[in-house]
Image (cartoon, rainbow over all chains, first blue to last red; front, top):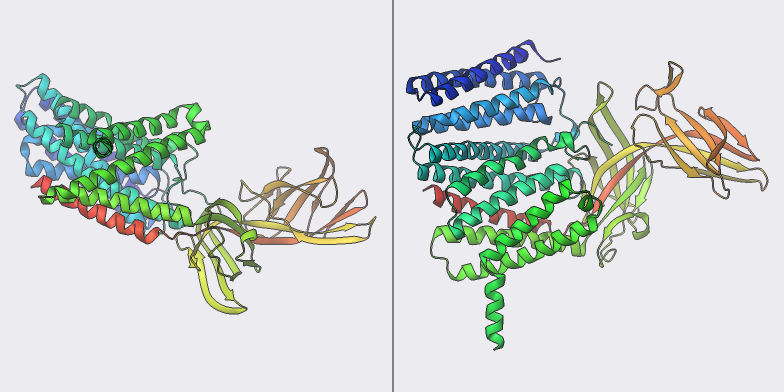
Length: 271
Length: 335
């Protein structure tokens, strides 16, 4: 059974992320500087509740939240939130990224409403030292790519409406690129550590399983972007479009297993 | 003239434009294979395209890195060169595994043994060098344990084995999930477990008795069915196994996966039509057309995925080098 604290923190997490999303969007539309502070404070409260949710789940299941979609969604979105807070504290001019980051986290929470299983002990497949490396780097990678996605949207907004209070286009572009580079590094570690883990668990490094395939597609997509940028100086609008569209590959890698039942990444039962 | 052609080919094959074209091509094919039925069903086409483009890409990376080595003048270029060298080293490791190794399955009864011999494996993939480096040894599976959460979710698995070489025990090991046995250049990974019925078949006409255990395939872990042919006859036997037999709402079920109360339902099939069927407990028999089949007991078995993986250390070195290179590149970018 899901604990009372976990349920309450989940519920309040949804409410505060929803409030934060509205405040950020309202502040952006009406260019209200003061309201962004309120939005950020609401975001911080939501993040604190989110942390309580993760701790209560961890205590309830007896293991870090790494098993299946629900746990990965709450932990992965927590990393996205952490990135945003650190980023916001370092560069306040990016505060409007909250109007994209908060709804993204909210969407992950809403997805969890329909898919919130009771805590269970780790199945044998998960009992590996490679698990933590694989999952943590997956979160870091997806977190970085989500921030670059948010910056890509801000870039397009800034390009269309130069007067809005956002950093200049070149700053948005170069920061987004750096997040993509960091995400690419994390994605590489995730794929390779997953591959080594797979060799111990299933006996083969690569099975063309849907999750593996979509992670590979994601890696290739960002690899193409990096090469285009290094060798052909691709910047600006096309880069922003790529960082937005490439997020689709992550969504498929993350949620793909639900629509592709042949995946080996469902560790629920063992043969 | 030849040098000119060679230079031109080197220039094209090592160009970054070709790298982007190949990356985009692989991206398109792999993505399409997730949606298009043509590529889903024709895996040979998909594999040929991916392996072809992948090989061209590796060649491109190799030549491009060789070109780059000449021009390393900063940490940034060094990082890139190291990352791409790491990819090449890792791929070389995987190739060594593919060319010199094999992958197969081995079924072992609990309490039984498995001899490391070419003919004993159910081969999945084998290289031309398969069997050349086989070390003669025998694996004895002493004990198998599995535990469940709420009766359904497996929480632990352990297969206790001993290795013998020339009748002398050389190693005791506990194979678990994520903890394969590595011995004699091979890796034994736990893949599956189940129960196999042991039968005695008496052919009354000729007065011959045969005894044996039949490992059946299972999809549902708790009660499962499969067919096998009765030796020396045209009959097939459909066997449904209930390790922990119970009747609920008039239906036969198995309460758990543990063999607490084993039963099997046997149907004898002639031309794919059932001609006789009965539920049998331990030591029960059924007779059809002068053939007497006795169910002796259920025996637990394990299936191991076996592979030889000689290129692993090289692939790992490549990964470490690649990560180091990418990190250096990234650090310089952030500066």
